[in-house]
Image 1 (spheres, rainbow, N blue to C red):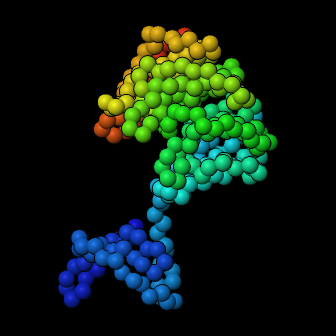
Image 2 (image 1 turned 135 degrees about the vertical axis):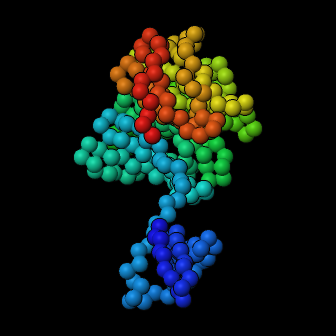
Image 3 (image 1 turned 90 degrees about the vertical axis):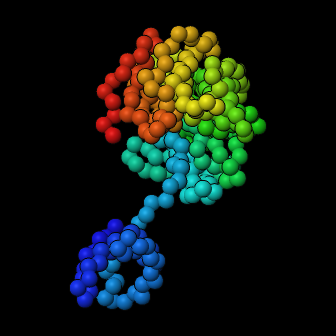
Length: 287
């Protein structure tokens, strides 16, 4: 953004150049907006192009051994991708020879240690992609298809079990928790206490936790915890603030849930759950 102040015949003008793309400029002059075609010449060749980032969901990411795997994503609302890349410790990037079977973004992602697991993305048409993929550090792929559950699922793993929980259905939210073996060859099932999407998943010691999310009545503070036998643990403290669309991460024996969206904006809250499922609230995010 560039601002210019100048006078013509004694009259003051204030101009703001909000965007320049190729030979078209968006200009606000004394409060009125104009779109101007600029004739390029040597005199104006040095005018910088002001880049405006386009909002686009990022690729999903999860580790497989010492390789970070990135899958899917988009370049816009309907321009979805099926690319899969691996980045090793030396920051060398390798493209997988086996892409996702459907162009999609907003995948849930987790890792069983030796492989990155992705699933439940959104296709270019906006529909759910009920396919789950397993990529090794060598970028070899296997997948299972045609499993229900919707989009905006939460993912976490524990002792060879890979959990995908909740999600958005066509006109409602899901309670289902599908649990794969790490090779995606068999499944078990469980259920969240409250149907919701946009929850966060993380592991802490002997449990996986699914926290927060969006329900049919708004943001949720509920936390559901399961052990490796799919026993649901009762009495887990709720989040300090009802919120959704936050990251869940594992640090040692702590499951942490950071930030997210609340009813009236963004949250700076941080909730930590230890191996005994005791909740603490560390220092809030700075921004």
